[in-house]
Amino acid sequence: MDIINVDYREKIPNNVNLTEDRRVLKALEGWHPGYLDWWRDMGPEGFQESLVYLRTAVSVDPKGWAKFDYVKMPEYRWGILLAPQEEGRTIPFGRHYGEPAWQDIPGEYRAMLRRLVVIQGDTEPASVEQQRHLGKTAPSLYDMRNVFQVNVEEGRHLWAMVYILQKYFGRDGREEAGELLQRRSGSADKPRMLGAFNEATPDWLSFFMFTFFTDRDGKMQLESLAQSGFDPLSRTCRFMLTEEAHHMFVGESGIGRIVQRTCEAMTAGKTDDVAQLRAQGVIDLPTIQRYLNFHFSVTMDLFGSDVSSNAATFYTSGLKGRFDETKIDDDHLLAGATYPVLEIRDDRLATSQAPALNALNEKLRDDFIRDAAAGIERWNKVIEKHGIPFRLKAPHKAFHRRIGPLAAAQIAPDGTVVSPAEWAANADRWLPSTDDQAFVASLMGRVVEPGKFANWIAPPSRGVDNKPADFEYVRFA
Ligand code: BYC
Ligand code: FE
Ligand code: FE
Image (cartoon, rainbow, N blue to C red; front, side, top):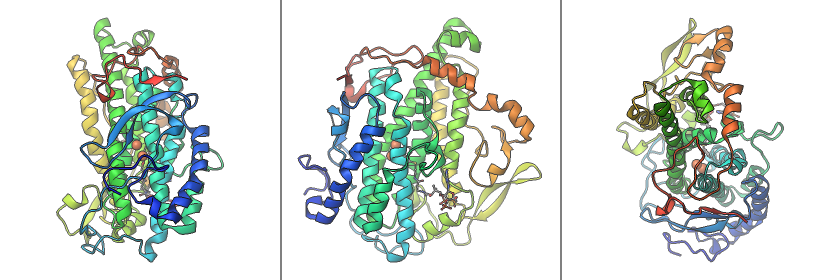
Protein backbone atom coordinates (compact mmCIF):
# COMPACT_ATOMS: atom_id res chain seq x y z
CA MET A 1 0.00 0.00 0.00
CA ASP A 2 1.01 3.53 -0.72
CA ILE A 3 2.37 5.12 2.45
CA ILE A 4 0.87 8.50 1.69
CA ASN A 5 -2.65 7.68 0.55
CA VAL A 6 -4.88 5.58 2.72
CA ASP A 7 -7.39 2.96 1.66
CA TYR A 8 -10.74 3.96 3.10
CA ARG A 9 -12.51 0.77 2.05
CA GLU A 10 -10.85 -0.99 4.94
CA LYS A 11 -12.61 -1.16 8.28
CA ILE A 12 -9.65 0.48 9.97
CA PRO A 13 -8.07 2.86 7.45
CA ASN A 14 -4.31 2.80 7.84
CA ASN A 15 -0.94 3.26 6.23
CA VAL A 16 0.79 0.58 8.32
CA ASN A 17 -0.18 -2.40 6.20
CA LEU A 18 -2.60 -3.85 8.73
CA THR A 19 -4.08 -6.43 6.33
CA GLU A 20 -0.74 -8.20 6.39
CA ASP A 21 -0.28 -7.86 10.14
CA ARG A 22 -2.95 -10.34 11.23
CA ARG A 23 -2.05 -10.34 14.92
CA VAL A 24 -2.33 -6.59 15.34
CA LEU A 25 -5.38 -6.36 13.07
CA LYS A 26 -7.12 -8.95 15.23
CA ALA A 27 -6.17 -7.14 18.42
CA LEU A 28 -7.47 -3.84 17.05
CA GLU A 29 -10.68 -5.44 15.79
CA GLY A 30 -11.13 -6.93 19.24
CA TRP A 31 -10.71 -3.49 20.82
CA HIS A 32 -12.94 -1.62 18.36
CA PRO A 33 -16.41 -2.58 19.81
CA GLY A 34 -15.31 -1.46 23.29
CA TYR A 35 -14.10 1.80 21.82
CA LEU A 36 -17.48 2.36 20.14
CA ASP A 37 -19.29 1.59 23.41
CA TRP A 38 -17.05 4.12 25.12
CA TRP A 39 -17.71 6.69 22.37
CA ARG A 40 -21.48 6.22 22.67
CA ASP A 41 -21.36 6.47 26.47
CA MET A 42 -18.76 9.23 26.86
CA GLY A 43 -18.63 11.02 23.48
CA PRO A 44 -20.73 14.08 22.54
CA GLU A 45 -24.05 13.66 24.31
CA GLY A 46 -27.17 14.03 22.21
CA PHE A 47 -25.51 14.25 18.77
CA GLN A 48 -24.57 10.69 17.90
CA GLU A 49 -27.09 10.56 15.06
CA SER A 50 -26.46 14.07 13.71
CA LEU A 51 -24.61 14.63 10.47
CA VAL A 52 -21.51 16.70 11.14
CA TYR A 53 -19.34 18.35 8.49
CA LEU A 54 -16.00 16.83 9.52
CA ARG A 55 -12.57 16.45 8.08
CA THR A 56 -11.11 12.96 7.95
CA ALA A 57 -7.44 12.25 7.42
CA VAL A 58 -7.01 10.42 4.14
CA SER A 59 -3.30 10.83 3.61
CA VAL A 60 -0.18 11.95 5.42
CA ASP A 61 0.86 14.26 2.62
CA PRO A 62 1.37 17.67 4.26
CA LYS A 63 -0.05 19.40 1.17
CA GLY A 64 -3.47 17.80 1.39
CA TRP A 65 -4.24 15.16 3.96
CA ALA A 66 -7.88 15.72 4.79
CA LYS A 67 -11.25 15.53 3.10
CA PHE A 68 -14.46 17.13 4.38
CA ASP A 69 -17.88 15.50 4.38
CA TYR A 70 -21.01 14.94 6.47
CA VAL A 71 -20.50 12.06 8.86
CA LYS A 72 -22.35 10.58 11.83
CA MET A 73 -19.71 10.61 14.53
CA PRO A 74 -19.94 6.92 15.52
CA GLU A 75 -19.28 6.15 11.83
CA TYR A 76 -16.19 8.37 11.69
CA ARG A 77 -13.23 6.48 10.22
CA TRP A 78 -10.65 6.50 12.97
CA GLY A 79 -7.54 5.50 11.10
CA ILE A 80 -3.97 4.67 11.98
CA LEU A 81 -1.66 7.07 10.23
CA LEU A 82 2.05 7.42 10.69
CA ALA A 83 4.19 10.06 9.03
CA PRO A 84 6.40 8.48 6.35
CA GLN A 85 9.53 6.74 7.55
CA GLU A 86 12.59 8.92 7.09
CA GLU A 87 15.36 7.07 5.31
CA GLY A 88 18.42 6.73 7.54
CA ARG A 89 16.95 8.56 10.56
CA THR A 90 19.26 8.49 13.57
CA ILE A 91 18.57 9.03 17.27
CA PRO A 92 19.04 12.77 17.83
CA PHE A 93 19.96 12.83 21.55
CA GLY A 94 20.96 10.83 24.62
CA ARG A 95 23.42 8.01 25.08
CA HIS A 96 22.43 6.43 21.75
CA TYR A 97 23.00 9.70 19.89
CA GLY A 98 23.74 9.07 16.20
CA GLU A 99 22.72 5.40 16.21
CA PRO A 100 20.01 4.31 13.75
CA ALA A 101 16.50 4.92 15.11
CA TRP A 102 14.90 1.77 16.55
CA GLN A 103 12.15 0.01 14.63
CA ASP A 104 11.53 -2.14 17.70
CA ILE A 105 11.84 -1.33 21.38
CA PRO A 106 15.06 -2.26 23.16
CA GLY A 107 14.06 -4.66 25.95
CA GLU A 108 15.50 -2.54 28.76
CA TYR A 109 13.31 0.42 27.82
CA ARG A 110 9.98 -1.36 27.43
CA ALA A 111 8.53 -0.49 30.84
CA MET A 112 9.46 3.18 30.64
CA LEU A 113 8.22 3.60 27.12
CA ARG A 114 4.98 1.82 27.89
CA ARG A 115 4.36 4.30 30.71
CA LEU A 116 4.94 7.28 28.42
CA VAL A 117 2.62 5.89 25.74
CA VAL A 118 -0.09 5.08 28.30
CA ILE A 119 0.06 8.58 29.82
CA GLN A 120 -0.13 10.15 26.37
CA GLY A 121 -2.99 7.81 25.41
CA ASP A 122 -4.92 8.50 28.61
CA THR A 123 -5.22 12.24 27.97
CA GLU A 124 -6.93 11.77 24.59
CA PRO A 125 -10.19 10.09 25.68
CA ALA A 126 -10.11 12.15 28.88
CA SER A 127 -10.56 15.37 26.90
CA VAL A 128 -13.51 13.89 24.98
CA GLU A 129 -15.13 12.99 28.31
CA GLN A 130 -14.52 16.51 29.62
CA GLN A 131 -16.18 18.03 26.55
CA ARG A 132 -19.14 15.70 26.18
CA HIS A 133 -21.85 18.16 27.20
CA LEU A 134 -20.64 21.14 25.17
CA GLY A 135 -22.70 20.44 22.05
CA LYS A 136 -25.82 21.30 24.02
CA THR A 137 -24.67 24.88 24.60
CA ALA A 138 -22.74 25.60 21.40
CA PRO A 139 -22.84 29.32 20.48
CA SER A 140 -23.25 28.45 16.78
CA LEU A 141 -23.25 25.54 14.33
CA TYR A 142 -19.72 26.55 13.35
CA ASP A 143 -18.51 26.18 16.94
CA MET A 144 -20.48 22.99 17.47
CA ARG A 145 -18.80 21.47 14.46
CA ASN A 146 -15.41 22.54 15.78
CA VAL A 147 -15.80 20.85 19.17
CA PHE A 148 -16.92 17.65 17.44
CA GLN A 149 -13.93 17.87 15.09
CA VAL A 150 -11.61 18.14 18.07
CA ASN A 151 -13.40 15.21 19.74
CA VAL A 152 -13.13 12.79 16.82
CA GLU A 153 -9.46 13.67 16.38
CA GLU A 154 -8.72 13.11 20.08
CA GLY A 155 -10.44 9.77 19.53
CA ARG A 156 -8.03 9.11 16.68
CA HIS A 157 -5.11 10.05 18.92
CA LEU A 158 -6.26 7.34 21.31
CA TRP A 159 -6.23 4.89 18.37
CA ALA A 160 -2.71 6.04 17.55
CA MET A 161 -1.45 5.12 21.03
CA VAL A 162 -3.46 1.90 21.15
CA TYR A 163 -1.86 0.81 17.89
CA ILE A 164 1.60 1.31 19.42
CA LEU A 165 0.55 -0.60 22.56
CA GLN A 166 -0.91 -3.51 20.62
CA LYS A 167 1.81 -3.78 18.05
CA TYR A 168 4.84 -3.46 20.29
CA PHE A 169 3.81 -4.42 23.82
CA GLY A 170 2.09 -7.81 23.45
CA ARG A 171 -0.26 -8.86 26.21
CA ASP A 172 0.68 -5.93 28.48
CA GLY A 173 -0.18 -3.59 25.65
CA ARG A 174 -3.60 -5.20 25.15
CA GLU A 175 -4.32 -4.84 28.85
CA GLU A 176 -3.31 -1.19 28.86
CA ALA A 177 -5.46 -0.60 25.75
CA GLY A 178 -8.44 -2.02 27.63
CA GLU A 179 -7.78 0.14 30.67
CA LEU A 180 -7.64 3.28 28.58
CA LEU A 181 -11.38 2.69 28.00
CA GLN A 182 -12.06 2.06 31.70
CA ARG A 183 -10.72 5.18 33.41
CA ARG A 184 -12.99 8.24 33.44
CA SER A 185 -12.27 11.94 33.73
CA GLY A 186 -13.15 13.16 37.22
CA SER A 187 -14.03 9.69 38.55
CA ALA A 188 -13.35 9.14 42.27
CA ASP A 189 -12.22 5.52 41.91
CA LYS A 190 -10.84 5.35 38.33
CA PRO A 191 -9.71 8.85 37.42
CA ARG A 192 -7.63 9.81 34.39
CA MET A 193 -3.90 9.92 35.09
CA LEU A 194 -3.01 13.63 34.98
CA GLY A 195 -4.60 16.43 36.99
CA ALA A 196 -5.87 18.79 34.28
CA PHE A 197 -7.76 15.92 32.66
CA ASN A 198 -9.92 15.42 35.74
CA GLU A 199 -11.10 19.03 35.83
CA ALA A 200 -14.53 19.90 34.42
CA THR A 201 -14.94 21.75 31.11
CA PRO A 202 -18.46 22.99 31.81
CA ASP A 203 -18.73 25.98 29.47
CA TRP A 204 -17.32 27.36 26.23
CA LEU A 205 -14.99 29.88 27.84
CA SER A 206 -13.36 26.93 29.62
CA PHE A 207 -13.34 24.90 26.40
CA PHE A 208 -11.52 27.59 24.43
CA MET A 209 -9.00 28.10 27.27
CA PHE A 210 -8.50 24.33 27.42
CA THR A 211 -7.82 24.02 23.70
CA PHE A 212 -5.52 27.03 23.78
CA PHE A 213 -3.47 25.96 26.83
CA THR A 214 -3.96 22.26 27.47
CA ASP A 215 -3.93 21.14 23.83
CA ARG A 216 -0.74 23.18 23.59
CA ASP A 217 0.78 20.96 26.28
CA GLY A 218 -0.25 18.21 23.87
CA LYS A 219 1.71 19.95 21.15
CA MET A 220 4.85 20.38 23.30
CA GLN A 221 4.76 16.79 24.59
CA LEU A 222 4.13 15.39 21.09
CA GLU A 223 7.01 17.47 19.72
CA SER A 224 9.25 15.94 22.40
CA LEU A 225 8.02 12.40 21.72
CA ALA A 226 8.37 13.02 17.96
CA GLN A 227 12.14 13.19 18.63
CA SER A 228 12.05 9.69 20.14
CA GLY A 229 14.61 7.10 19.15
CA PHE A 230 11.71 4.66 18.86
CA ASP A 231 10.79 5.45 15.28
CA PRO A 232 7.13 4.27 15.19
CA LEU A 233 6.36 6.58 18.15
CA SER A 234 8.13 9.45 16.45
CA ARG A 235 6.20 8.93 13.24
CA THR A 236 2.82 8.64 14.91
CA CYS A 237 3.43 11.82 16.93
CA ARG A 238 4.53 13.72 13.83
CA PHE A 239 1.21 13.02 12.16
CA MET A 240 -0.78 13.82 15.34
CA LEU A 241 0.85 17.26 15.37
CA THR A 242 -0.79 18.16 12.04
CA GLU A 243 -4.20 17.67 13.69
CA GLU A 244 -3.14 19.40 16.91
CA ALA A 245 -2.67 22.69 15.11
CA HIS A 246 -6.42 22.91 14.51
CA HIS A 247 -7.22 22.32 18.20
CA MET A 248 -5.10 25.29 19.23
CA PHE A 249 -6.61 27.37 16.44
CA VAL A 250 -10.07 26.65 17.89
CA GLY A 251 -8.88 27.91 21.29
CA GLU A 252 -7.02 30.97 20.09
CA SER A 253 -9.70 32.13 17.68
CA GLY A 254 -12.46 31.30 20.18
CA ILE A 255 -10.99 33.51 22.91
CA GLY A 256 -10.11 36.13 20.29
CA ARG A 257 -13.78 36.28 19.22
CA ILE A 258 -15.00 36.55 22.83
CA VAL A 259 -12.53 39.39 23.47
CA GLN A 260 -13.65 41.07 20.25
CA ARG A 261 -17.31 40.97 21.29
CA THR A 262 -16.55 42.29 24.78
CA CYS A 263 -14.47 45.15 23.39
CA GLU A 264 -17.27 46.07 20.98
CA ALA A 265 -19.70 46.31 23.90
CA MET A 266 -17.18 48.31 25.98
CA THR A 267 -16.64 50.76 23.15
CA ALA A 268 -20.33 51.11 22.28
CA GLY A 269 -21.34 51.66 25.92
CA LYS A 270 -18.16 53.63 26.78
CA THR A 271 -17.80 51.53 29.91
CA ASP A 272 -15.61 49.03 31.67
CA ASP A 273 -18.15 48.50 34.42
CA VAL A 274 -18.41 44.78 35.01
CA ALA A 275 -22.03 44.77 36.14
CA GLN A 276 -23.09 46.84 33.15
CA LEU A 277 -21.23 44.60 30.70
CA ARG A 278 -22.63 41.48 32.28
CA ALA A 279 -26.11 42.95 32.03
CA GLN A 280 -25.47 43.27 28.29
CA GLY A 281 -24.58 39.60 28.17
CA VAL A 282 -20.87 39.83 27.34
CA ILE A 283 -17.96 38.43 29.35
CA ASP A 284 -15.94 41.15 31.09
CA LEU A 285 -12.16 41.10 30.56
CA PRO A 286 -11.26 40.47 34.26
CA THR A 287 -13.35 37.28 34.18
CA ILE A 288 -11.55 36.18 31.01
CA GLN A 289 -8.25 36.83 32.83
CA ARG A 290 -9.33 34.63 35.78
CA TYR A 291 -10.23 31.74 33.46
CA LEU A 292 -6.89 32.22 31.73
CA ASN A 293 -5.12 32.04 35.13
CA PHE A 294 -6.86 28.80 35.99
CA HIS A 295 -6.20 26.97 32.73
CA PHE A 296 -2.64 28.23 32.53
CA SER A 297 -1.86 26.98 36.03
CA VAL A 298 -3.35 23.49 35.66
CA THR A 299 -1.48 23.19 32.37
CA MET A 300 1.79 24.24 34.08
CA ASP A 301 1.38 21.18 36.31
CA LEU A 302 1.14 18.87 33.28
CA PHE A 303 4.87 19.29 32.65
CA GLY A 304 5.65 17.44 35.90
CA SER A 305 8.10 18.27 38.68
CA ASP A 306 10.66 20.97 38.03
CA VAL A 307 13.45 18.56 38.87
CA SER A 308 12.71 15.03 37.74
CA SER A 309 14.89 11.98 37.51
CA ASN A 310 12.24 10.41 35.24
CA ALA A 311 12.75 13.18 32.72
CA ALA A 312 16.53 12.66 32.85
CA THR A 313 16.15 8.93 32.27
CA PHE A 314 13.67 9.39 29.40
CA TYR A 315 16.19 11.69 27.72
CA THR A 316 19.38 9.76 28.34
CA SER A 317 17.69 6.59 27.11
CA GLY A 318 16.65 8.26 23.86
CA LEU A 319 12.89 7.96 24.49
CA LYS A 320 11.79 11.59 24.85
CA GLY A 321 13.75 14.55 23.54
CA ARG A 322 13.48 18.31 23.81
CA PHE A 323 11.25 20.66 21.85
CA ASP A 324 13.11 21.40 18.58
CA GLU A 325 15.88 18.98 19.61
CA THR A 326 17.40 18.77 16.16
CA LYS A 327 17.59 22.57 15.90
CA ILE A 328 19.48 23.00 19.18
CA ASP A 329 23.22 23.43 18.86
CA ASP A 330 24.78 21.52 21.78
CA ASP A 331 26.05 18.03 22.59
CA HIS A 332 22.51 16.53 22.86
CA LEU A 333 23.71 14.78 25.99
CA LEU A 334 23.60 17.73 28.39
CA ALA A 335 26.81 16.58 30.03
CA GLY A 336 27.58 18.98 32.88
CA ALA A 337 25.00 21.53 31.72
CA THR A 338 22.72 23.29 34.19
CA TYR A 339 19.30 24.94 33.93
CA PRO A 340 17.60 27.43 36.27
CA VAL A 341 14.71 26.19 38.40
CA LEU A 342 12.65 27.93 41.06
CA GLU A 343 12.53 27.17 44.73
CA ILE A 344 11.09 28.86 47.79
CA ARG A 345 13.72 30.46 50.01
CA ASP A 346 12.83 32.72 52.97
CA ASP A 347 9.25 33.03 51.73
CA ARG A 348 10.32 34.17 48.29
CA LEU A 349 10.86 32.56 44.94
CA ALA A 350 14.54 32.12 44.23
CA THR A 351 16.42 30.62 41.31
CA SER A 352 18.89 27.81 41.64
CA GLN A 353 20.80 25.84 39.03
CA ALA A 354 19.84 22.20 38.54
CA PRO A 355 21.50 19.64 36.27
CA ALA A 356 19.96 20.34 32.86
CA LEU A 357 19.10 16.67 32.44
CA ASN A 358 16.93 16.72 35.54
CA ALA A 359 15.37 20.06 34.62
CA LEU A 360 13.95 18.94 31.26
CA ASN A 361 10.35 19.26 32.46
CA GLU A 362 11.09 22.85 33.49
CA LYS A 363 12.70 23.59 30.15
CA LEU A 364 9.68 22.30 28.24
CA ARG A 365 7.43 24.34 30.54
CA ASP A 366 9.46 27.44 29.60
CA ASP A 367 9.23 26.58 25.89
CA PHE A 368 5.47 26.27 26.33
CA ILE A 369 5.24 29.68 28.03
CA ARG A 370 6.99 31.33 25.08
CA ASP A 371 4.74 29.54 22.61
CA ALA A 372 1.56 30.56 24.47
CA ALA A 373 2.68 34.17 24.94
CA ALA A 374 2.49 34.86 21.20
CA GLY A 375 -1.19 33.88 21.16
CA ILE A 376 -1.98 35.99 24.23
CA GLU A 377 -0.41 38.97 22.47
CA ARG A 378 -2.70 38.43 19.50
CA TRP A 379 -5.68 38.72 21.89
CA ASN A 380 -4.15 41.91 23.26
CA LYS A 381 -3.96 43.34 19.75
CA VAL A 382 -7.77 43.12 19.59
CA ILE A 383 -8.09 45.01 22.89
CA GLU A 384 -5.50 47.55 21.81
CA LYS A 385 -7.31 48.19 18.53
CA HIS A 386 -10.34 49.27 20.56
CA GLY A 387 -8.17 51.66 22.56
CA ILE A 388 -8.94 49.87 25.82
CA PRO A 389 -6.22 50.08 28.52
CA PHE A 390 -6.40 46.43 29.63
CA ARG A 391 -3.99 43.60 28.82
CA LEU A 392 -4.40 39.86 29.28
CA LYS A 393 -1.35 38.25 30.80
CA ALA A 394 -0.10 34.80 31.68
CA PRO A 395 0.31 34.49 35.44
CA HIS A 396 3.68 33.59 36.91
CA LYS A 397 4.54 29.95 36.29
CA ALA A 398 4.63 29.36 40.05
CA PHE A 399 1.02 30.49 40.51
CA HIS A 400 -1.51 27.96 41.85
CA ARG A 401 0.67 24.88 41.46
CA ARG A 402 -0.25 21.37 42.62
CA ILE A 403 2.78 19.49 41.28
CA GLY A 404 6.44 20.00 42.20
CA PRO A 405 8.05 21.92 45.09
CA LEU A 406 6.15 25.15 44.35
CA ALA A 407 2.95 23.37 45.34
CA ALA A 408 4.10 23.73 48.96
CA ALA A 409 3.39 27.48 48.99
CA GLN A 410 0.60 29.82 48.00
CA ILE A 411 1.83 32.04 45.20
CA ALA A 412 0.04 35.03 43.70
CA PRO A 413 -0.23 35.59 39.91
CA ASP A 414 2.71 38.03 40.11
CA GLY A 415 4.94 35.42 41.75
CA THR A 416 4.78 36.72 45.33
CA VAL A 417 4.58 34.08 48.04
CA VAL A 418 1.50 34.90 50.13
CA SER A 419 0.07 33.65 53.41
CA PRO A 420 -2.94 31.33 53.49
CA ALA A 421 -4.99 34.28 54.75
CA GLU A 422 -3.92 36.49 51.84
CA TRP A 423 -4.64 33.68 49.43
CA ALA A 424 -8.11 33.19 50.85
CA ALA A 425 -8.81 36.91 50.69
CA ASN A 426 -7.77 37.13 47.02
CA ALA A 427 -8.62 33.76 45.48
CA ASP A 428 -11.80 35.16 43.90
CA ARG A 429 -9.77 37.88 42.17
CA TRP A 430 -7.22 35.41 40.83
CA LEU A 431 -9.30 32.40 39.86
CA PRO A 432 -12.88 32.06 38.56
CA SER A 433 -15.23 32.54 41.51
CA THR A 434 -18.49 30.64 41.90
CA ASP A 435 -20.14 33.89 40.87
CA ASP A 436 -18.05 34.10 37.66
CA GLN A 437 -18.84 30.49 36.87
CA ALA A 438 -22.55 31.02 37.44
CA PHE A 439 -22.49 34.10 35.20
CA VAL A 440 -20.65 32.31 32.37
CA ALA A 441 -23.01 29.33 32.75
CA SER A 442 -25.99 31.70 32.46
CA LEU A 443 -24.81 32.79 29.00
CA MET A 444 -24.59 29.26 27.65
CA GLY A 445 -27.52 28.38 25.40
CA ARG A 446 -27.54 26.64 22.07
CA VAL A 447 -27.71 28.69 18.86
CA VAL A 448 -28.58 26.47 15.90
CA GLU A 449 -29.70 28.82 13.15
CA PRO A 450 -27.04 28.69 10.40
CA GLY A 451 -24.96 31.87 10.38
CA LYS A 452 -26.18 33.05 13.82
CA PHE A 453 -23.93 33.45 16.87
CA ALA A 454 -24.57 33.82 20.60
CA ASN A 455 -24.37 37.41 21.77
CA TRP A 456 -21.15 36.91 23.80
CA ILE A 457 -18.97 35.83 20.87
CA ALA A 458 -18.15 37.46 17.53
CA PRO A 459 -18.44 35.45 14.28
CA PRO A 460 -15.22 33.95 12.90
CA SER A 461 -13.46 35.77 10.09
CA ARG A 462 -13.94 32.80 7.77
CA GLY A 463 -15.74 29.47 7.70
CA VAL A 464 -14.42 25.91 7.71
CA ASP A 465 -13.29 24.56 4.32
CA ASN A 466 -14.12 27.96 2.78
CA LYS A 467 -17.83 27.50 3.40
CA PRO A 468 -20.12 30.56 3.49
CA ALA A 469 -21.11 32.14 6.80
CA ASP A 470 -24.54 30.49 6.89
CA PHE A 471 -23.32 26.98 6.07
CA GLU A 472 -25.16 24.18 7.86
CA TYR A 473 -22.21 22.60 9.67
CA VAL A 474 -24.41 20.22 11.66
CA ARG A 475 -27.65 18.59 10.50
CA PHE A 476 -29.70 17.27 13.37
CA ALA A 477 -31.23 13.83 13.26
N1 BYC B 1 -1.07 15.25 37.42
O1 BYC B 1 8.80 12.97 38.14
P1 BYC B 1 7.57 13.72 37.82
C1 BYC B 1 -2.36 15.99 25.37
C2 BYC B 1 3.08 12.39 38.37
S1 BYC B 1 -1.51 16.53 26.78
C3 BYC B 1 -0.96 14.07 38.07
O2 BYC B 1 7.68 15.16 37.74
P2 BYC B 1 7.60 13.05 35.11
C4 BYC B 1 -3.75 16.44 25.19
C5 BYC B 1 4.03 11.63 37.47
O3 BYC B 1 3.32 10.84 36.53
C6 BYC B 1 0.08 15.71 26.70
N2 BYC B 1 0.20 13.42 38.25
O4 BYC B 1 6.94 13.16 36.50
C7 BYC B 1 -4.12 17.74 25.48
C8 BYC B 1 4.82 10.80 38.44
O5 BYC B 1 4.06 9.67 38.81
P3 BYC B 1 4.77 8.30 39.27
C9 BYC B 1 0.12 14.39 27.43
C10 BYC B 1 1.31 13.99 37.74
O6 BYC B 1 7.45 11.64 34.76
C11 BYC B 1 -5.43 18.13 25.32
C12 BYC B 1 4.92 11.71 39.66
O7 BYC B 1 3.85 12.66 39.53
N3 BYC B 1 1.36 13.71 27.21
O8 BYC B 1 -1.83 15.25 24.61
O9 BYC B 1 8.92 13.69 35.06
C13 BYC B 1 -6.38 17.26 24.83
C14 BYC B 1 6.28 12.36 39.77
O10 BYC B 1 6.38 13.43 38.81
C15 BYC B 1 1.29 15.21 37.06
C16 BYC B 1 2.38 13.64 28.10
O11 BYC B 1 2.29 14.11 29.22
C17 BYC B 1 0.02 15.85 36.90
N4 BYC B 1 -0.11 17.03 36.27
O12 BYC B 1 6.67 13.99 34.20
C18 BYC B 1 -6.00 15.96 24.53
C19 BYC B 1 3.66 12.98 27.65
N5 BYC B 1 2.55 15.53 36.69
O13 BYC B 1 5.62 7.87 38.08
C20 BYC B 1 -4.69 15.54 24.70
C21 BYC B 1 4.04 11.77 28.42
C22 BYC B 1 3.33 14.55 37.12
O14 BYC B 1 5.56 8.65 40.47
N6 BYC B 1 4.26 12.02 29.83
N7 BYC B 1 2.61 13.61 37.75
O15 BYC B 1 3.59 7.40 39.52
C23 BYC B 1 5.40 12.51 30.37
O16 BYC B 1 6.30 12.87 29.66
C24 BYC B 1 5.53 12.56 31.87
O17 BYC B 1 4.84 11.48 32.38
C25 BYC B 1 5.01 13.86 32.52
C26 BYC B 1 5.35 13.81 34.03
C27 BYC B 1 5.63 15.05 31.86
C28 BYC B 1 3.50 13.96 32.46
FE1 FE C 1 -4.61 14.73 21.12
FE1 FE D 1 -5.60 18.08 20.78
